Amino acid sequence: MEQKLLWGAATSSYQIEGAVSEDGRTPSIWDTFCATPGTVTAGETGDVACDHYHRMPADVALMAELGLDVYRFSLAWPRVQPDGAGKGNPAGIAFYDRLVDELLAKNILPWVTLYHWDLPQALEDAGGWPNRDTAYRFAEYAAVAYDALGDRVSQWTTMNEPWCSAMLGYITGRHAPGRRDARAGFAAVHHLLLGHGLASQVIREKARANGRSEGLEVGITLNLAPKIPASESPEDIAAAHWEDGLSNRLYLDPLLRAEYPADVAAKLEELGCPLPVQDGDLSIIAQPVDVLGVNYYSSNVVAAAPAGPNGWPASTAVQRDVERTAMDWEVTPEALTGLLLRLEREYPGPAWYITENGAAYADAPDANGFVDDADRERYLRTHIDAALEARARGANLRGYFAWSLFDNFEWSYGYDRRFGIVRVDYDTQERTPKRSARYYADRIQEEKKRELMSPVQTG
Image (cartoon, rainbow, N blue to C red; front, side, top):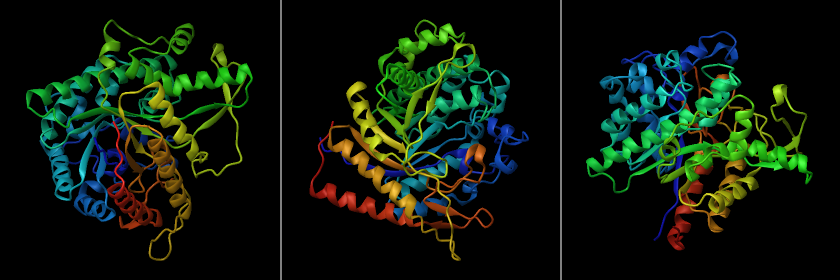
């Protein structure tokens, strides 16, 4: 069956919406984290961000001008279900009603992500993701969201990058809620995945009950990064395998094989950070995954290092002589081809989507606000080429979404890093498409013409 590639862009609620105290929205862990001194560059917050909450129709019109097929956005849990419990908030849901309708009116597919890190603070106060109960609260939130939007939305992503939520939020403390507790962090890993499974069940059950199963796609998005041994030495190979386990296999294996990687699970048990698996959990986590989103930015060369405190395995990243972004991430598009082929080979089944891919650079606007970002254009071009190479070689790749549509609040970096293909002047909120946006719009049209001439057969 002919399957066209979908082209889109992605954002997240806290990074662009603003309006953090309007229409019944309650604080999220990011509101609390930003209010804590020393957590975010220059003490900046997402209170206003890109003011998308008030500028949404014009923003959707801009998406249409760029020729996007899909817009992937996240719902703000504390806007939809304040305090993470009870019925939905009509005023908050109304914003997403308008957004979905606006997108459909412009022939843009709405792609909903339920969780992009903005946990209601009330649920963090009750224990957060290390608390098993949060997974069940997430399923209830999924039910509220589906009841509100499921008549028009068929594409549902449960979680965005659970690695970041668990590792950065509960182990290193670099992200909200800013905790530093390894045992809690690995409990969070399991409960995030459990929440995904429970929410997937709820969405599918409701879709069946309402006769909406046709076309329904439910999945999850992972940030995946190839870990490449620095040499053929057993020590470097073992170090890379461990890092691959923590970053990639710890999520892929339970989702797609109904098991945690044995080496990682055993080591975590030994280190006093067991995964709190209960009977039946893995079958819930391993719900059918229609779509697995791949957020790809870079890869790492890994060398062995002396064990860390209390016997934690350690490694070091080997710096290569390659281009680097403003995040100090290596630009390695060829590794994306390898990653997609690995996924197809080792975890066959889902359709793969590049749900985020992009780069931060030190943009320099001219007097009119235009950014001649040749570096970002080159990044997009080489990574799109790499993704299409994997598709040509058999990967069931169905779409590519640029990150990000807009410059936005970049988490602990505040507004100091810009990933957007559209520049946002944070003082005036004026939007100006960059050179990379023009390139992306042209590339979309070019690829659509190519597909019309030689349709790709997949799946």
